[in-house]
Image (cartoon, rainbow, N blue to C red; front, side):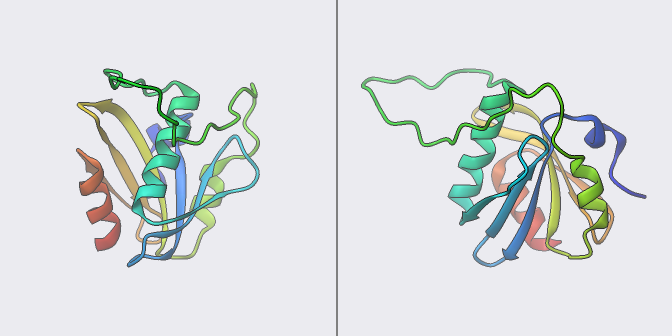
Length: 142
């Protein structure tokens, strides 16, 4: 079956390789950087993916959060200014032989949540989600 075509072409495709499903720790890969970002917990994973989406500007947030005072941003900024991809992320995902490798494609960020699809490399199975909690539950069930 392989990765769905829509995922292969998407510039905002990310891959995660989990060290532990229980603790949700592991590494986040994108096609613009050679080294993965490590995360230890669901919160860090969500902030890393949000930072990557913000850096790309895609998919755009439907609304901006209000700020009443200056606050420090917690989302990491990624260097996505390159015209070309550093590597083909889908090749890495398809070659992975672990049940802990997932491709995540976020279609929209509406109502302060994500909507998209997640693909499990070892089971060659794709599933859609409507918010972050559904994404996490799908990953844990795979």
